[in-house]
Length: 291
Image 1 (cartoon, one colour):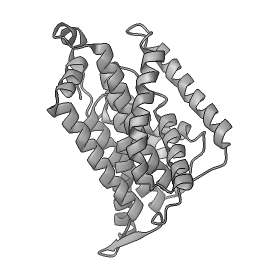
Image 2 (cartoon, rainbow, N blue to C red):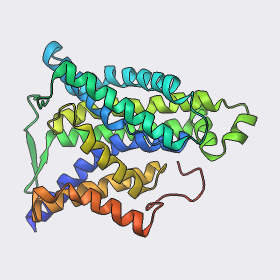
Image 3 (tube, helix red, strand yellow):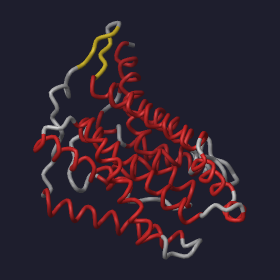
């Protein structure tokens, strides 16, 4: 029983990290109906940049987020303007190919710059843990979970308490009506894509602290993120958070009670089951406007 509870605690904390990464993915889909296959590559890119800032300038990985989030926001806006904006509305398949090409380009640049050796961000507190009622809580994962809550809370406030958030929600619900009300869907899409990339920037530093990574790590990562956003319901931010926690717990429990080798398989089993039983996910809406 102790092992099971410990696994659930670890899974909840890990789910918080997944939620941070998946929130950008589902935000972009909610606004643009584009599945960003480069989201994992952007997370890995941010992990490399955070690692570089930590090893060369001694900046704490969590503090590097203050630099990486704005940088990735700008990168996201540029990617939208250069690669996605020229596409016609409804070119879903083409946008998939374009974003996959972007992911491959990022992987190629990282492999040429950093080589393919696995790296990790070895901060002094990385292996420290707190003990509470006989259970251990990783300091890194606990801080990452708190960071995820803060970022997701900020994202909720932005979407529901600001004029820009109202423009985003209007675009999600009905782009034509939003345009008639004076909203520029192209501008909202560019800034929304930038926001999604900025969450990847924040998640990258956390990812580098928790997991070893190399330039090809985005393949496994994007597979997990897609399973999470499909399970939660494409375009549903709350669904992505719930699915992240659920999958984090499932992965941790399988690793602790069965075998770590089968832990990753939980994502693909969940993805197949959802697609067969409830294709719109646990919290997906049949109409636009799930955000």
